[in-house]
Image (tube, rainbow, N blue to C red; front, side):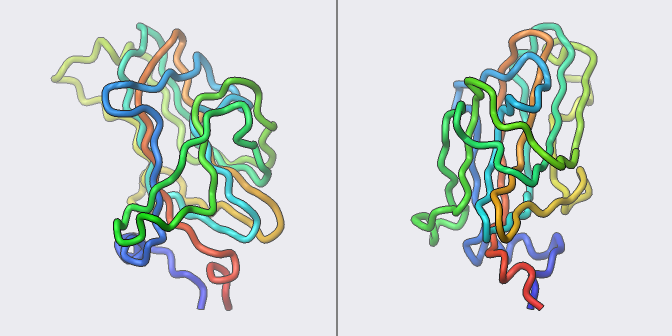
Length: 198
């Protein structure tokens, strides 16, 4: 039977050891984001190999320093491999400690150091544009940091992966000047056959 998709299934997927997480930035050392949105320089990306399917559960971005400039973020998919070359590879961890040694079939990478493969057939899942300087927002402001949680109605749901080629899920983060912050991402992982089983 094919995988049932619903918010109520999230904890079951965690219990089954299907959910993986990785991040950009660590402890008090933030990530350095790009200065604009460019499709070939993602700040965070996941490549999904042929025969694997993922359902992104959550991606959050917390800004730290935004340099008095416009902040933008865009989450996208692609039906090709945008490649982890020209980035720093990071290693996903299973969020169920019982399965802590079980490795994800996906690859994840952060901080573009050069151009990636141009994405094809991309879908835009969530866009955020903040014109005021986020640094200048005080404790009384109501600005919510970037939250993509499609099974909770925040952003467009997506399924990433195919039977014969590597597909991609990625975040473009841009600020008019240099900016820093953190990214956290979690997804549920399935084989292609079990996901689309009759």
